[in-house]
Image (cartoon, rainbow over all chains, first blue to last red; front, side):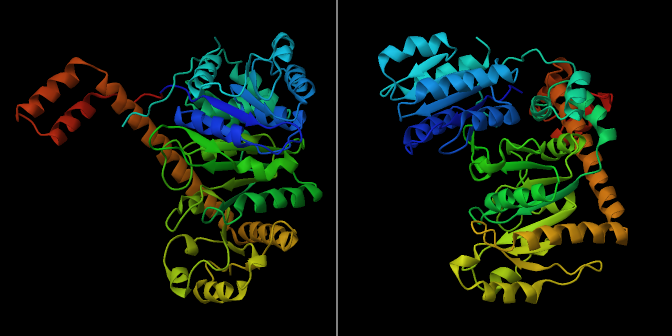
Length: 132
Length: 328
């Protein structure tokens, strides 16, 4: 039987807008993946701990508060510290263009802004889980 | 029906022995990996479960069942805190449904359990049913075994929000908690057979909604003592933590009762029987799958069935006669 892809969708930080995160969760579910959603206002520590206990292939972070530089990078750092650097991390939300290169350089594999077709995001996570 | 599932290539797994060693030392990454490879039914799963078995049998396994939205996750979250304050280590396996159409799932039980997420004495794992009926996933109790071997004092199992007849949990847990809430039906609902019979402890949650007394009256009318244990009915409200210490006490009291009455052994034996049969079923299913890919013989039999030279049952008997039992 083919392996199930497991993805953690997480909302770091203090903004309370998870409509986007839920849309992504649903798209991944409809593509046959198991999506763990942990709700609003998670710390990077919460997110990394959940990713390890749930043994996910990838994490999708959604942030609309503008604190993505601090929060996304903390998640990547903590994953490496916990020897879980193989878990792929992607981000989305309101992310200014000029931040994208720095996020990618720090280990965020992809950044999806508003208007990204869902199919593109699904394809990214499918590829990420294959270790490509 | 084949589920449409995106394939995932196998990543290099660390040796089972290292994983088990890590697990025994409390490494959560090892626990997470072990549960995954068992859940995915990797070839190493049999070896992993065999290696874990000697370390299991110590945890108190408590199942929580009841309709969706009745507050099982929130209740478990508060109970975890309660037992942590009492110095116990707690594991949780929370099951949510898999889509019958896409094979996908959204697992949301963790949302209610975030306050224990980073506690080193707590491990929470979400699990999708992956087509298994009965309110549980096929690998649920193997994940429980992983957490048991990790040294958890209690392991809570949360079923899929179960309706009226998802009763498998009662044959697999030591203590079954049936969670209900007020304003959800009349006396006849409570009289019906099934889920409302299986509790060792009954909880009327969300008592803040009002009128818990009529539900309690209906429940007490139908709950009878079984094997010398009268199931208590407790009132709780998770946000305020109302009734949580009493619920924790009731779970421990039931465990004591099982031990002193000798029923623990009886339940363990019934669990072992379930597990042996489950493994036998899986071995057989795998053999049958292998048979269908066996090619010529299978094709020949299919042809004979179509030509009406043989009926499907006789063909099955013929093909099973050829099968040789093997460990995997």
